[in-house]
Length: 222
Ligand SMILES: Nc1ncnc2c1ncn2[C@@H]1O[C@H](COP(=O)(O)OP(=O)(O)O)[C@@H](O)[C@H]1O
Ligand SMILES: Nc1ncnc2c1ncn2[C@H]1C[C@H](O)[C@@H](COP(=O)(O)O)O1
Image 1 (cartoon, rainbow, N blue to C red):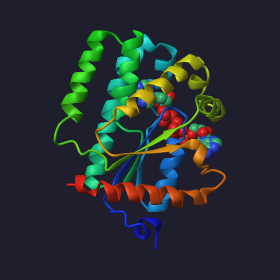
Image 2: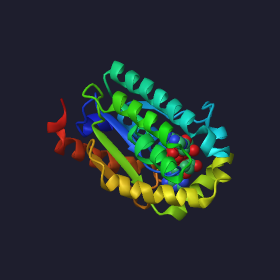
Image 3: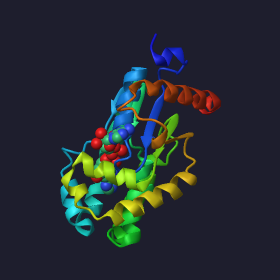
Image 4: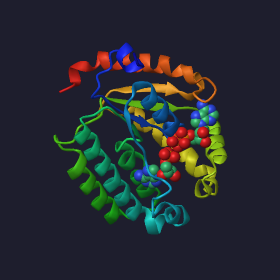
């Protein structure tokens, strides 16, 4: 019996993992998908044709990058729907607009016309009754110093070369964003409360908490 069966998690569940860059979403996505025998939907970083250019020149490339991410996530959304759920998704679509696009608009590195075009497109695509929201958003959070340490250790050059102020501002914005988020149920996990790299068996207690949240919010399922 796998953990999904043990904790009575419906096989069509969709769980999205959210949190700032480097907090551990991909690691959590992999561990949860293995534990629950679910499919994964990862953010493609290595094959993203805009990401390096974006970190080199935010102003020039922020609109292109947002459009690219929106298209990629929408395709993934369609794939999840076609399989009938049973997915762990690495980063939610909500963060694109709620964190990244907004942050660059506020900083002046995404121009107001591009921002309006992007948010109109996002709202038309996502904020419709036809868009299936995930059953649960697992939000990973932790101290900014640990997170910057992980970004440095992971070694994506463009992120390593980005000033720490960028990560600090993003971290603060995430805090505000999650406190006001209400598009689907949320389970918050502090990265200091588990270590899936040293103790992979800790995934069971996380699955247990996920199962509890899903049970508590089961009336929201269609
Ligand atoms: N519990 C942990 N302890 C130490 N390092 C971790 C832990 N979880 C993830 N990492 C490391 O932190 C870095 C960022 O993790 P990752 O899962 O890629 O984050 P994200 O997908 O949120 O950007 C990776 O190098 C990963 O190996
Ligand atoms: N919507 C986005 N806008 C700008 N940058 C983004 C967006 N979504 C992801 N990113 C960046 C941030 C990181 O450099 C990589 C991957 O994110 P990660 O949190 O490491 O999975 O893409």
